[in-house]
Image (tube, rainbow, N blue to C red; front, side):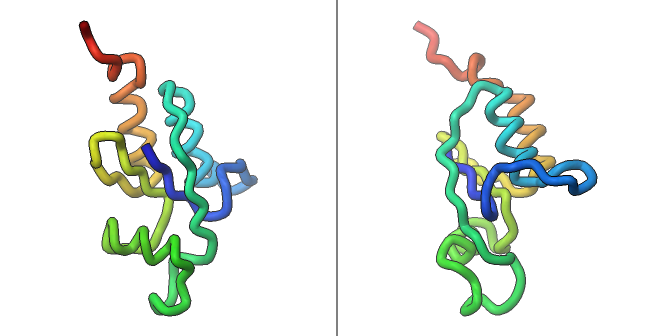
Length: 99
């Protein structure tokens, strides 16, 4: 599992919290320990001005904004609210193999 974030997973005073923090926190609360990939830069402007990480996110999703989650099953989820919803609906404990 890989979570692409801007500069980090820290909380800010932004109303509603920082999207990258919210996504990361939801995954931790659901029992996951995602690999965190910091892509830096801004998700705006021409592709040539983007960091390599932002270009990678754009190739995966068609847009350079983060956070973006790539699940172990290969599903790509972008937007912090969708990642939070996914984490709540798919706790790690429910993913354990039966047998």
